[in-house]
Image 1: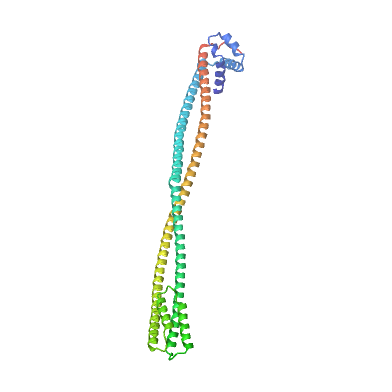
Image 2: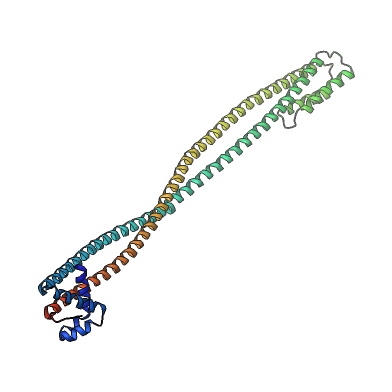
Length: 357
């Protein structure tokens, strides 16, 4: 029955504009279309079956009501979909905005905080490593200086020991002189020259040696007084040499102690530089890890933003299609509703008792 009424309504829509025309004119117009002929046939059957016009009117009115209900349901569902669409747009736009904020903040943290921090730490580490290199250079210099000083000390002590041995030889020779021969005197003078050659000109023993050589060259060794003066001078000279050796040894000990203290200080400075470098490396490692973390977060949020934007575009495209479907469906409903209302008016105004196909 519903299909029959729909066919009737479509046919009636074709001839709705002819409501004011005569039944003969209306029948002639309806016969020009398939829907019209179907309508006339159904009306004829309805009349032959003895059906009342009121039954046809009731069926059309029921269809009109169904169309109204369908249109209301269509509007309700579309409004609900529109609300969902608007809510989703708000949500996606908020997510996009938050992702943009996260990306911007991450870039700001990386560029204005973490990267400068990293560069500052690297610079401080490089500076401390340069200090360490300078420290090791100073250690090398101190070792070289100490080595040279020690070599000079050993050379001086060796010279003084040689001088001491020569003085001892001279004293031993003097102890045997008694009316010395020319050869013995010559041998003694040679011993003095040997002592002279072992003493540097600027040594503090040089004046003693000069006085001794002068005395030995100008005096007669047979004179016991002269011999006594020479022995005294040699003993005084020997004592001066021993004092010099003792002074040099004491100075060597002091120099070694100062050297060791200096090396200890330099090693302590080096260790302190290393301690600071280790602490800075810990900070640098943490900073690099933070850069990686923030970079990964920024990249993820950028990917999220792209995903949200894609979802937003997809939703807009889908909603645009749904709007088109809604408009097309609503237009169809409204067209059928208008046809139904026109058909209802037409059936109410037309006498179908003489209609034949």
